[in-house]
Every structure is written in C-alpha cells, then in structure tokens.
Amino acid sequence: MSPVGKTKDQGWEIGVRRTFSISPARAWLLLMTQPGLSLWLGQGIEPAFKKGLVYETTDGTTGDVRSYGEGSFIRLRWQPRGWDTASTLQVRVLPAKTGTTISFHQERLQDGDQREAMRQHWSTVLDQVGELFSGG
Image 1 (cartoon, rainbow, N blue to C red):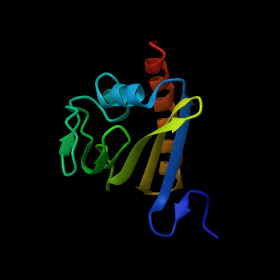
Image 2 (spheres, rainbow, N blue to C red):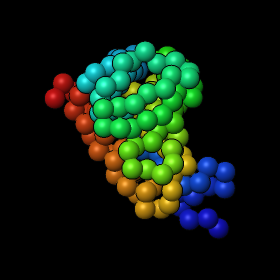
Image 3 (tube, rainbow, N blue to C red):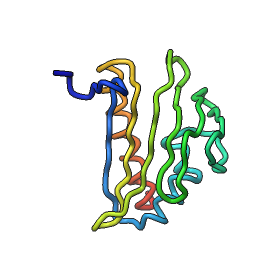
C-alpha cells in the first residue's frame, strides 16, 4: 500500500481546494489578472495564457502552459528556482452551490516532505485569495 499522497503514475501529489462566495466568472478574472495572478503564480507574468506559452516569474519560477480552458482551468509545468525537477500544477475554477470552488492540484512532487510543504503553500495561497475575493 502506497503512503498517502503517492500515486503509481504521477508520484507524490497534493490537492487543496476551498469554496468562496463569488461567481465563477469573477473568481477566474481575479485569479488570472494582477494582483491575483501574483498570489499563486508570481509576478512578472502577463495574463495572455495559451497552450505552449513559456513563462518565468520575477522570482525565477519557470514552466509552460500544458492546457488551458478559459474561465475553467489552467494546467502548467511549474518549477520554482532551486527545485531539481518541474511539477505539474492545475488550477481549476468550479461552480459550487454557494459560489465557486478554487482547486490547486499538484503532481510529480519529489517526496512526502515536498508534498507537505506544498499543501501548506497552497493553503496559504487560498487564504490570500479569500482576502482578495472579499476586497481585503
């Protein structure tokens, strides 16, 4: 039996999600433009996403867009400076009964320690996103 968070095909992974009282369209707009974009991806990125776009943030995170669904999801390779390998990150905006669920799912993490660090990271990002959504 594999440890929690370890899959046969994608290695270590983590998913963090939260539901907010905001429309999916508004949530998407706030996540994909500044300052929301800098909360989860970083600064120095222009929000002209399309499949194949290569990016580098001002803090050295690099990657490329693997797939993109306007208003719904973005899946990208994501490699912060100092990491040996890239992970796969997917951000989804999902309609919910009480508003919108924002989901961060990350695959191809190195080990359980990195998985736990990223769980904490994405939880903090969702806290900050909540503040942005509430106008804070």
